[in-house]
Length: 156
Figure 1 (cartoon, one colour):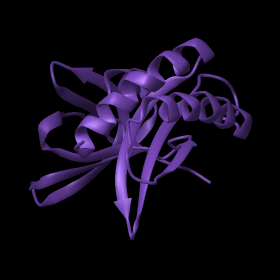
Figure 2: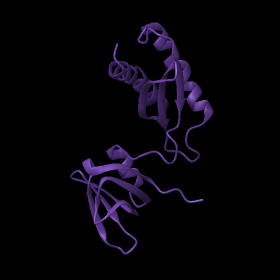
Figure 3: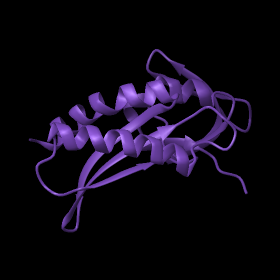
Figure 4: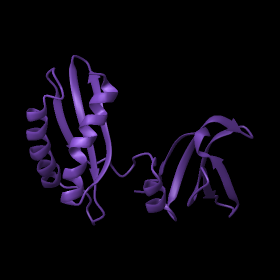
């Protein structure tokens, strides 16, 4: 089975688990690193403190049993359940909605006026465009297809 098919089928298996347990399924990866295969499931939740080890364990136990019964993955692999982290790239409409009003960093595939990196306050996603208010209160609009990565700014 192709990587894409494994990802899609694993997504179908884990989504009812995450929905029932109250987590957001952020992403499913199936990748080869070195000599080993990894099925990674990234979950999130809208609570202070985010995802805990207990949350990851709950999903891992249920999904592990389903994966064993389904024989979805024929070769040996490692199952990892984790949080996507606070610095995860924004991808979905939900990510943009949750991050509206927050400071973000944006990198483009091609430069605009000599720059490929921009910072500002995310205003939202509108008709496929990312709207950011820069430090001078100027509204900037970027086509989502031209954005290599956008993530929340982490301040320490």
